[in-house]
Length: 166
Image 1 (cartoon, rainbow, N blue to C red):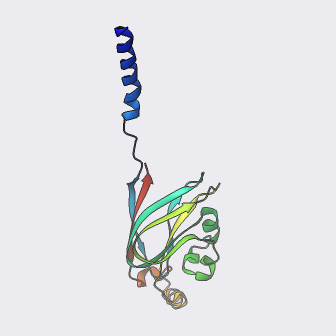
Image 2 (image 1 turned 180 degrees about the vertical axis):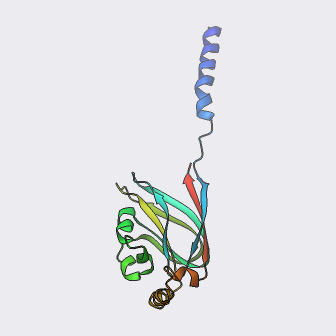
Image 3 (image 1 turned 180 degrees about the horizontal axis):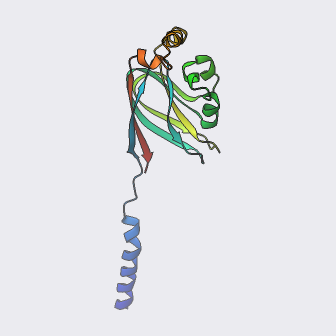
C-alpha cells in the first residue's frame, strides 16, 4: 500500500512539473535598422515584407523633417516606378493604393496589419518637404546634369528600427 502511494505521489509530481513551467512570453524584439537619406519630395521603398498569411508589422521611425509612412503592394510600386523620376511626381505616386498611412511623422512607433497576400508589401517613406521639380529639371537640362534635384535638396535622414514578433 505504501509503495502504491509513493508511486502515485511521484506520478503526480512528474505530471505537475510541466504545468508549473513558465510559458514563453512573446513580444516585439529589435531586429534590423537602417538610415535613409531623402531629398524634398522623394518617395523611397525601404523594406519589403514577404507575401504570406498576413500579420502585424512594427517599427520605430525618427526623422529630421516630417515624413509620410505607408505600405503598398510591391507589384504596384514597381509598375509605378518604371520611370525613375516617377518617385518625384505626385500625380504618379498618389494613384497608388496605400495602406496604414501616417503623415507628418518626426518620431513615432509605426504599426500596421498586413492582410494575407500573394504579393510582397513595400514600406514607403516620403519626405513631405516640397520642391519644384520643373525648375530643377530645367536647370539640370541647361547644365547637362541628370538628377540635379538630388544635389539641391538638403537630406532628411530617417532612422528606421524594425521589430519582429518572437
